[in-house]
Length: 90
Image 1 (cartoon, rainbow, N blue to C red):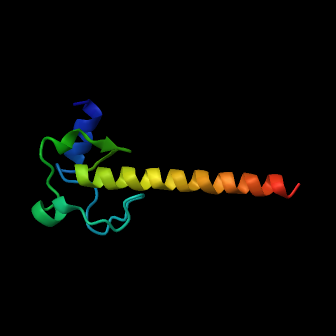
Image 2 (image 1 turned 180 degrees about the horizontal axis):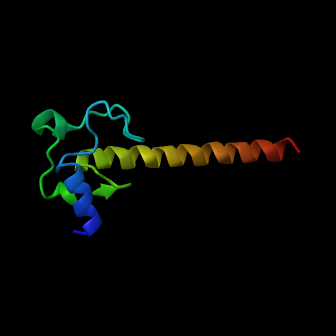
């Protein structure tokens, strides 16, 4: 585990960064199961997952990644449609 990861985990006291009412980008109002079941505590397997200087449990990391990928795909679709409209209007 990297020094940075260890620092993030220590700062968060081994808890998932998606604490109740945190409203993180691309997670929104998703309720972390670790916070529901164990006051946010992450076990050793979860501790390797540091995203944007924040430790997230596997569930929250999955939600964040999935939502970000959907956002990127939707944005690409909008950009493509915009380019088609611009081409047609010339």
